[in-house]
Amino acid sequence: MGRLSAVFVAICIVLIACSVGAVLYLRFGLSGTESSIVALTALTGLALYNAVTTRLSDRSDVSGQIGDLARGIADLARQVAELGRRVAAIEGKAQAVVEKTLAVTQPINAEIGEVGGLIQQMAETIAAHDSQLKGLTPATATPPPPPPAAEPALAAAPSVAPVPVAPASDIAHAPPPVPPPLPVMPVAPAPVDAAIAAPPPLPPIPPPAEPPVLAPPPTPPLAPAAIAEAKPPEPVAPPVVAPSIPPVPVAAPSPPAAPLPTRIAAGRFHGMEPDAVVGMIRDAVDNNRVDLFLQPIVTLPQRKVRYYEAVARLRVGDGEPLTATDFLPYAEAGGLMPKIDNLMMFRCVQVVRRLLAKNRDIGLFCNLSTLTLVDSETFPQFTEFMEANKAIAPALVFEVTQAALRGMGPMENESLAALAQRGYRFSLDNVTDLRIEPRDLAERGFRFVKVAAPLLLNRSGITLSDIHPQDFAGLLSRHGVELVAVKIETEATVVDLLDYDVKFGQGFLFSPPRPVRPEVMQGIGDRGDVIGDAPTASTAPAPLPAAMSGGGAPPVAVRGVSSLAQLARGASARN
Image (cartoon, rainbow, N blue to C red; front, side, top):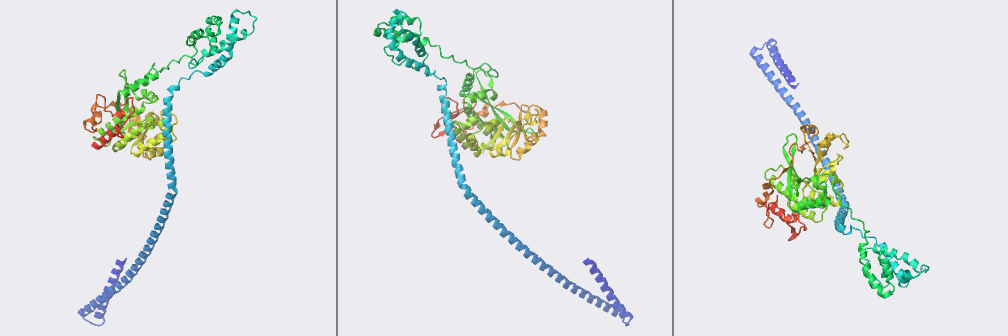
């Protein structure tokens, strides 16, 4: 718009100058040159006047805009200052609230810490008492015979003793009408029978001179002879005592026969006794016949190996390996799981170190029993070993079953928290239903959940979750927990799982569990990662420290530190 106005003004100035020149030439008779000069002079004057007036008007406008801009900047500065003041006031109030909250919660935190310590001490004490009670249970397993039967015998003996001294001859030779002996004979057999049925500790009681006359009635053939020979009261007593002692064990068939041992009805140990199975498993553990198998966990759909799961196999006398499904119930009943977990954990650390030397993006899942978490002798050494190897904590994942997690008490939770504080992660295995709280799992250190593919795909048609299984992986991932589908055996299952946003898979479709090569198990010894006083590698699959050899004696500390911790510290120092 401004450009059009300037063009219009220029045209007007030119027209005015031309008009002045024409008027001077035509009206006043000036020559053409003079008229042109006057016209140019007028044009120049008008142009200068227009330029000066335009500049003055522009300067006034610019000065007004500058003034407005200055006023706006001042207002903005005032608003920024006000916002700064308000932010400072809010920060001061928030700091005051935080300090007040800390002052209020500090005593509560201290009390909670004291309560936690007391609960831990109580749990340890209860565990110690439980172990002592378990140790005392076999001694009291067979209840002694009831003592009340002996008391009537002891009570009846003095009352009947004076009777046989004199009336014994009357019973043998006197006529039937004699009344005193008749009530005596029915009374005598009852106490004697009770004495025979009495427990073994009662015979050592020194017998008086007169009562032994009543001992023969339990053996009917000897009763008449004993009563007949009892005419002299004092000489007859010693002969009667001698024959009365042997019949006591012979005539005591009253204790019930011991029940026949229960045999296993079906399965791998069909027809065997549970104690024999436990003994066989204990022999395999003590002789280090525990093999380590690895099954890969792959990414989907790329099928790249990302983790391995460590699986234990026991080699028993018949040479056929026992899977965890076969020996786990009997190992738990026999208290062998801490030893097995120690063996497996030591070998898993060896394998993880060997794997990390080649590939940093690899990890290992290792099963952990709740019996190990509450074992007062094994778990402190286990924790010390894990503390010495916490450099590999991101690559080692402990597996806990869903049933074990739901049945954990304060002591098990404290043990899990101790491992989580050292940087170790956990995986939930053997999931039977999808009613899981991901937030709680994430807070307790769980980073993986293993669900069987048939359960996740809900092919049974049973409702096992509050949400659709297709949304289960997304729910877990929002809390930092990854879903692993296990027991995958067909390609169709993989295709269906891709629709469920499952990122990891495991199953026989990808690979069955395979044994670890012997050179891998002996790799730490070959690299010189074991300290000098550690045991050397033998024909066994892996070298074992003294604290984890699985022998009958409990592990002992060497110079205040367990041999397991010494091995771990040496391995971490070498690496």
